[in-house]
Amino acid sequence: VNPEILHPKLDDQLEVYAALQTLLDGAISDLGSGQGVVGPLDLSLNGNAQAWIRVARTLKARYYLHTAEVNPQAYTQALAQAQQGISSPAGDLTEYHSSAAGEENIWWQFIARDRDSYMRPGKFLVDLMKARNDPRLPQYFSLNGFGEYNGAAPGEGLDAQLHSNLSPIRLDPAFRQPVVTWAENQAIIAEAAYRTGNTTLARQALDAL
Image (tube, rainbow, N blue to C red; front, side, top):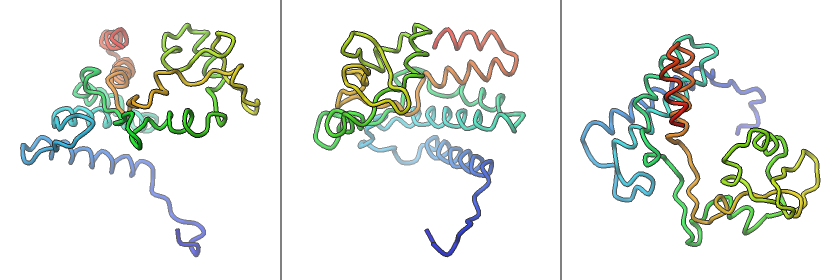
């Protein structure tokens, strides 16, 4: 923010990831110490310290995967953490939203309330999901005016009749947006196990997902 510094020195990316791992280790230690409480006002995981520890483990696994191209141990490290991570969808970390004013889901605030004409789902993603018969299509997107799923191409003018919008599920004011989830944790286990040669575990995680 200092205009006199034209070329600021950026932190090394691997150092940032290492600092995140250290921060998460500290959080896990604090949460497991038995001292104090997470707090009765915790709107995400109801003050459950063990649930927060599992979220922290999944985050550690996520960040190890981010370094896999340069860290030979990344997949082993990610697998070890993910196996201690979020163990069921009930442990997902989601944003807290409700239908009360000021607490609504941010997508509802942006699209349904204020700026419906600003954006639509992208054509590439929608076409890819259609080609794969992805069962998540109705969870993410709505049918257009012709009863089809159709995304907007880059630079294409938006047409509410032609282009799908987000689904009613995603545009529910009380929809709790996922942040760190069991599904991601299973995907990490599947990838990390496969990359470390444990194809049986990889298949188990993929099948569960």
